[in-house]
Length: 434
Image 1 (tube, rainbow, N blue to C red):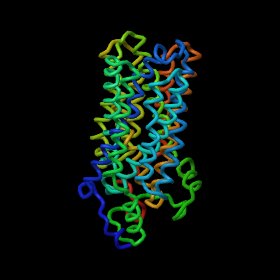
Image 2: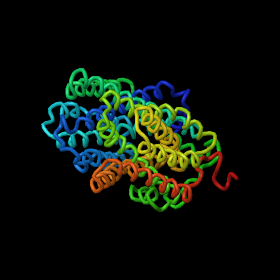
Image 3: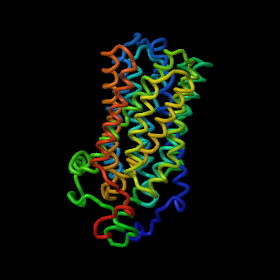
Image 4: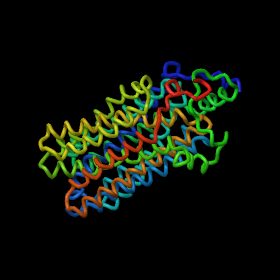
């Protein structure tokens, strides 16, 4: 107990591990980013997807969402039993075959299989980089912590999309993705084995301090209708519907992934069909990722000062507006501006939805709660991709998918505004601290 209680929390005192985890999540972003520009844009010419086969085109993102969502759920619970580092290594091991599957793919079904493995990789690795940072930092640094985590990941995603677009142009799609992918995965495994520490002891230390009554700062508004050591089903039902605050956050997380599914599947197709070159497509999509990633450096920290609720609601609406803007005019500059607006909206909501969950999830079951929230959030990839595929299929054009996503974001933001509340413990502490 004394060893646990003596572990210190904070970015500065754990800076070495914090930086290692930031590098890990950037490599996680590289891994998903390599599949986001080249693969959809060349789905017809390189991988045999028939023109305007919208449901077939979305199949790989549907598979990704279902698998990643499920693995987020598993990762959170598993990490509380075997530790964060082992789960991280399992995730990187799942990524090893991905570049080879893409390189040798004789048909689109191989790409779908590669994306299933990508979902396993992302569900395990991204969950662990976020959870590990939350383990070792203080409550008043959560917005900044998640902001930095997502900043590193989505800047990595954007860079990978641009780099692989140029590599595909120079070396061919398959060779470029093989070289980039294998380099990324092998580097990540090596760094994990040599330098990453397991952070589960820090989470146990925080829980021990709460139990001993020696924790500092205002008490968060933890749910009261849950046991001290809840079962998986108990946490699942709490996050999903029994606590309306957390349920409102979970539905917003699910719907905001409609935007990312759209950017992944139909932005490259839409832009490529409108005459942009592959590197130009990479840059427009990259602007969305750069603004999303770069802005989170500030928006996460902003929520540590002004709270989570307002940035989350505004972010949903701004992000939806950016999607709608794509349809209103044409040209590289306009599409880049629209992508930037969506990226900024995403930056307002993305780290702060997660921070809100972390605020009111007790350290005894925080890993599980984050995993279950991420299950619902990333299930949005599958539901969103299916929805936009259906919209495009029955309308005969990708434009309907854009409107489907924009309207969904406005409705979901309204639900969050009505049923959510401020979760920052300093701004809205538990009643006994008021």
